[in-house]
Length: 291
Image 1 (cartoon, one colour):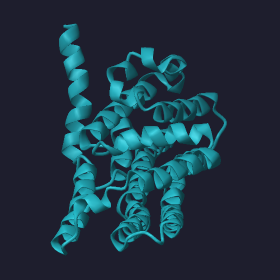
Image 2: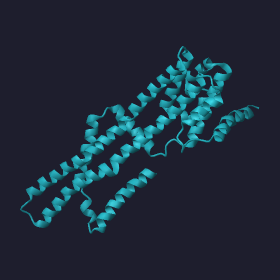
Image 3: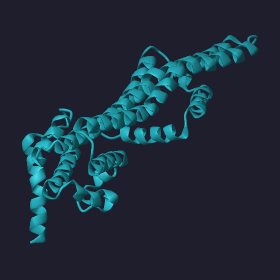
Image 4: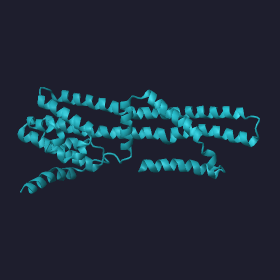
């Protein structure tokens, strides 16, 4: 919602200032200039960007419309980790093997559809637990392995925002292309009436205006927004990594979950009491249902 409000504010401020200075809005409506700039920008993206990155960009743009990972989602994650860690405490790490052969059908993870919808997070958790099941790895080596996984994920996830930023940087240049083409058209009518020449020059200058506005008012900020989306996803993985590493070092489930809670960003971090209540509430509900 904030992203939509910001876009409207940018457009409204520019148009309102233009009108306030005596400009006429129809002079800014130049579909041909917009076609030259927008079409060239889209074409350059298709030329330079692999299909996988384009698909990732579409997913991230969809995610950018949301409000990010909420406190409720983190509480749900911590509750799920607690239940998995309890299994390790009670029956050993080998008892998790059946849960990660088919995570959607796991008796524990099936209760957390929000987590299962994050395929990257599911794969990260499953791969990390399978390494623990195989055994023979020291805690510091496991941490290094998970860090490498997080780094690779971060690097891949940053590609869409990097691509969008580069496209934004090219828009002023494409605006100049549109302006030059407008000047060419103007020169072809140089012997026409002054009003007609002025109109054509104005249309050409709108091309430069649109290129700069799209760069700094829309596409550039959108690229920054995607970076924030990726950073939030990185915090989600780091939360799991910290909890897994703590339980592998031998800490009890409640303490391992506390390790995971402490790396959650402050604005989304549940309190100690909220986490404790969430972790204990679900088993109590299940016990009541079974009775």
